[in-house]
Length: 104
Image 1 (tube, helix red, strand yellow):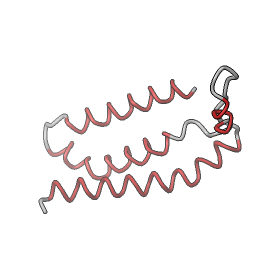
Image 2 (cartoon, helix red, strand yellow):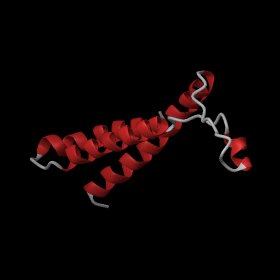
Image 3 (tube, one colour):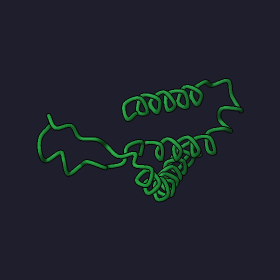
């Protein structure tokens, strides 16, 4: 396995576990502060069962992915003049901002 694949696999596994750990603590906090989804009367009746489902849960994926890619990809970003990692981090933050606007 090439070093690049080892970094990619390590980053993916780390992001998964970090997201899991952050989610373990984040979701109960979101429930506690009542960041739940509001269901309007105009929708289907079966949507009522979703009422109170915490929103903003994507934060756990952003944190896990960002921390993991920073930890594993920083050496590549510093070593070369390749802007790939900066573009990836920028896109992750942009997608996070879109998700925030959608949930809020």
